[in-house]
Image (cartoon, rainbow, N blue to C red; front, side):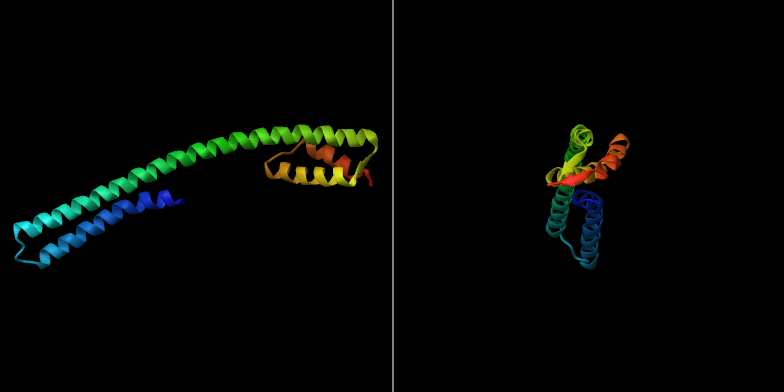
Length: 138
């Protein structure tokens, strides 16, 4: 649950609590005059306006978070494709050469781990198994 979700869920509760408090205060004072009543009414209106502002802000934040999440998904997909192409190229080159280097091996292992974390699988995994049995040279 995000902060904006929390605000959006709590805002109506704050309004109800404030209304109840003012109602209790009003009922305790049997001799409320019009001025006191209007002051309470104005304070309640201010609280209601604040609650509505917080709800609007929460809604706006949720919209922005949805937009950011959509962009992150696109970024992850693009990054996955880029990693697929790089892993395929580098592992195929090493397999055809018959060996790998320490530096190349380090980069490929790190990239494969990231590739898997992004959801990559299939052909690259089978290529990775072949790559892992290569001799490592300095």
